[in-house]
Amino acid sequence: MSVLNNITFIFITTVALSYGWGMRGTTIGGEKGAMLPGALAGVMIAIFSGSPFLLENFFFLSALGSMGMYYGGCMTYGETLALSLATRPAPNMKKGLIALYVKGFLWFAVFAEILTLGIAALTGKYFSVKEIIIMFLLMPVVMITFLFIFNRPHNKDEKIFPKIYFSITRKESWGAMFGLFTLLFIIAIVKKIPFVIEFTLVCALFGGFGWVIAQLAHVFCANYSNIFNNSFLKMFGKRAVSPWKVMECVLGAFAGLGISLGFILFQNAFNKLAVFDAVGFWSPVARYDKAFTYIFLAILAADMFHYFIKSKKIQAVAEILEFPFYAAIPTLLVFLGNKDVAQLSSFFVIYWVFVQEISFEKPNKLRHPKVFMPIFTVIGIAIITAQLYFDTVFNIPITILLYGVFYELFTLIFLLQRYNKNTSKDYDNSIKKYLFKTEVATVHIYFVICITIFTSFIFLR
Image 1 (cartoon, rainbow, N blue to C red):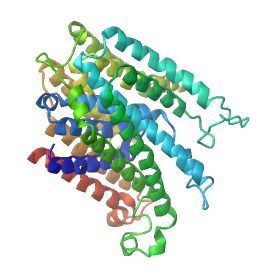
Image 2 (image 1 turned 30 degrees about the horizontal axis):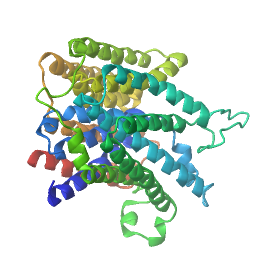
Image 3 (image 1 turned 90 degrees about the horizontal axis):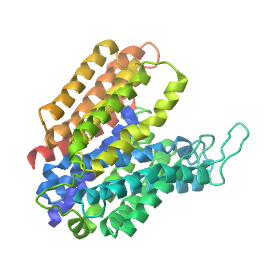
Image 4 (image 1 turned 180 degrees about the horizontal axis):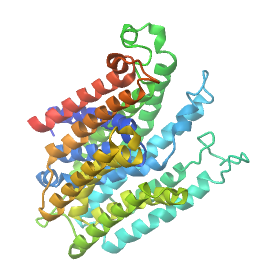
């Protein structure tokens, strides 16, 4: 790429991931919320890869990116942040920042590994079907083993905690991510795929240092920003800037910076990796693809039952099963070249996890949930029908509109609805004061600016 293209890649990806990570914490959160910035990263790499084939089939990279970012969401970090923030002075600033570095490193390392190993698998030159299946069978075994080595025993009632512990009372699972990172890194070394190793290390370093810097910004905004007597803050009010949101957006920006820089630095290795012959993506079990796709959809449909069955046991089981349902199983199918699952994961799943959160997970966010639920469900069915029965490919501009405009528009709608529900309790009756005396205005003005930048680039390129 030319210098101008490199600068554009870095800028657009940094802006997009800053928004994506901020939006993750605004509306969905958790593992499912992390799919949005991962998908954005995949799209940006496809656009700037220089490969017409990857650009045409961007949804494979989008799917791999979204599922790769999902894995890190299994790590709790709320109490980890509190180690460097909860009081003034902080309970344990040094430990808190070290912990965030570890978790940021592992989160973005695994994202990079899933993305790049997926590309390697799709070439058909590095893995056999048997090897891919063995890899995915080993993943939970290694993760559970490392979980028990590093994150157990844990009994908060008896105050029994692991030797290396980065929270206050919550169970940790960063050991599982360490195991997954180690397994995939060893596979990349054994298979001699330089780009996987190089790209992973750059993303991991930016993820680790990015979270440390983001948390320092968080601490500053929460405890020290008032020393400047900032006229901007005085104009908007004490709650005008959310320190937590500053942390998320700074972390996302560092993620985008690391992903784009890692790609640029090792693009020659990427070009040697992403070589696809005239056949295109390797799809060794293509004759079973439709069957696997319907099984995947059946799994997603089965997952919806826990929203209607009010049982703590069912809820607990559903929470455990989300990991294979939304990450492991579709990742395996994409590694095996399943185009339908890649398209569904790139578009429908990103749409559906948003719908789940605002319509089923927390229907109290809506004023008329019984109206919105069926509408969103019908739209979801229409998306599936278009993709599977009419071979519709939602192109990059439409996909970016989903990731940006759709998420932001409906998030704002629900925020305004929340205002109407809370005028008598938490907020002044003035809509102007609700918007401009809280972080609503500053956060979403920033989101709109970011969305405008990367969406305009997509439509004008």
